[in-house]
Length: 450
Image 1 (cartoon, one colour):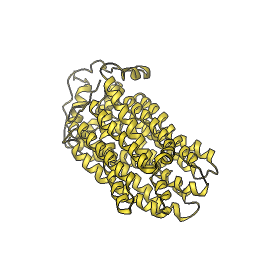
Image 2 (cartoon, rainbow, N blue to C red):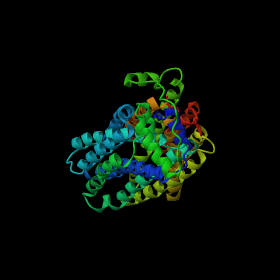
Image 3 (cartoon, one colour):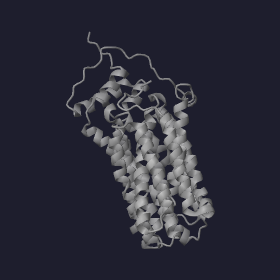
Image 4 (tube, rainbow, N blue to C red):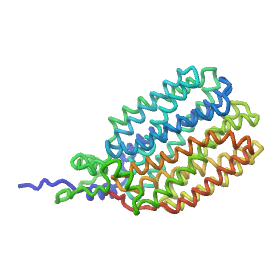
């Protein structure tokens, strides 16, 4: 009788790690990246819409800060729930659901007539956004061959710059064009609702997740399609599937496992990095257009400066994508965070147009390169059974800082202006650079499939 034993989880993981980069990898990276770019477009749009609404609705700084912060409150809730759901229901399912939620809520925002309705919808937008980002990075990391896994995640994160640039273009050309320009910007943000269908039907589920749930035959079919694309024919393992090695099964068990002796130091350091980087990044980039307007630049000119500054994100990602497989995760992350700290101080004290643009571009370059490295290292430090949970909770805790940042920025501006504000941001980047050395560096090492 023929042996019909299915491949083991270990053999599936090894086969994924041994693959060359194929067209299917490119398709998966592009498909996930487009979702990531649409996320970035939505987050970026609110910074431009805020500057317009402050003038049209005569909003106070506090009210404007709440519009930004309530979205991050939703992101905090979404990130923690999204990670738990992705470990239970699958990466692809949750990825598609999050795109649908925030796409519909963003489109509905185009029709609001007052502050209260906008706040409710921004919270819903945040739920979808917060859940999508850690799930997407986990999803791609589980397909990526070990030797280029970090580089693939940084490239995924680079789609953030594409989306933010799209937001800057919409901010520059659409929002100032008419009194309803901000409504048209929100309407464009509804595109993710349609893209969710592409994700749901066009991308495969993670084989590592399927294997962790005992669905070995499905995982085998997906891995085989990648091998066929690479011109490889795998020899199925002639052994039965071993008992599951998952170290956490229930949601409660996964959360508790983050704090056992094996993972507690990583979790503490990871949460600290996410907290400080979120505070500095969102505190700076959400408010930059408004700060420039208050400095005396008109709306169009302010948005033009922001667009130029945003373009520096792409080379930042490119350099980080190369260095992360040369220097490793921790070194790349800490160097880019130190560069962010120095750039923030220079931006806060810049007074001339060339200095504002140059220091702003440096801040974009280093800060977004650091984000690429952070998203690469985050899912790697946990096993498959709690990978999305660990990444989601790190992102969720980080969103606490992004909730606080837009509310604290007006107070710091009153207390000491831009120099004090960006010095505080620089200090946050330095704390993050130090905490990065408490993370596990798994450059070129296979993912833990427990």
